[in-house]
Length: 76
Length: 268
Image (cartoon, rainbow over all chains, first blue to last red; front, side, top):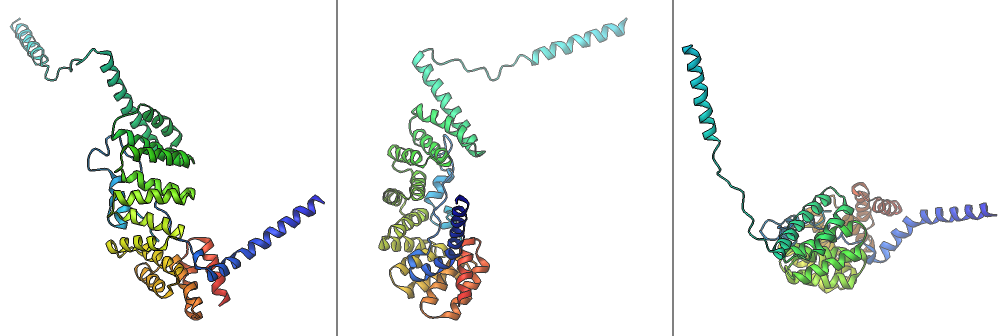
């Protein structure tokens, strides 16, 4: 009886997985809010004990940079 | 006999010269400046702080977050003055975040910003951590602070645009991605995010223009190609949509996105 139940659960999961991609596609077409925004920025790195005393602090420079590449923002 | 006397004289002369040249003390050791117990304790604290920072950052650089946590917790406990106080909390937050303690990391970054309200990197990391935790209200508060600290910064506008997009605040998201593109029009990702804003606002034509901009700048941008495909399909352009999904299926590195693109392509 236990074996049969496990088999049925496995079958249901397999069917759900196969249907997942197709349902996802339908969902994306019906609702544009399901399109995923870009990734959030990566965490900026450590700062030394004296790092913020002078001008050469890479995390602060990245955080205040005016362009995406200087800020290290996510690519495609 | 004379030869021996000559050699002995020479040896004595050279020994005297060597001894004379060894008598220079150009850099004497600095004498202690205090014997006051409180001042000596202060010097010891500064020395320990220096060592804790050095060891903590060395551990972070090699990815040993547990050791970094121990060293930097001690650095924070020493309660150093600014800017070391906020910097110690920022560095400890990195260790906590990498150990999966996002709640502790967020508290530490808020404390760092309390100590130094102009600490842009702390604000940037706080937004990223709150977004990761799914705490949109807290992420928005941090993003507003980040923009106030660095109103010209690309990362500040990107971060707040993303938070606003996740929260459904389309006017703010549109304004932030627009500001980012005004300063850096070649950033394809911002065109993509702005397209999502316009799609959610029901402005499909503007969204399509933004997606086309993104794809001119980055032709292999699979997520933008997929979004363009869905937009074309919704507007009834099945052949063009099929081409977009086919290209997306070839370009996508993400297996889920590739599976979705293949499924839609094969249905057309």
